Image (cartoon, rainbow, N blue to C red; front, top):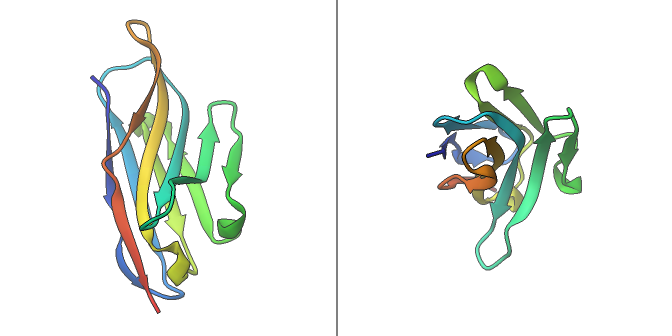
Length: 120
């Protein structure tokens, strides 16, 4: 059974920084993609940043130049460094991963979410 465990976030001042972590736990063969989504109150969940096993990295336009996604595949972990935070970055942030295992094929998993609140 695979699960994603997130950490980080919290209350940050405008212009400040924080770092989110996501670790994939359990037995599996390969991580195909990992990414971060966020959902603000009353809004839909949107992608913030993503990584593919081919090495492609994507960012939502509003976070380009401010957020940086990185991977530590030895730890099956993904990080999101968030700099120059703005109040509009306030949301619940979710880690997601598409993971392949011989027994299940490719499945998509979600973390429990971690809250980031940026005070003005």
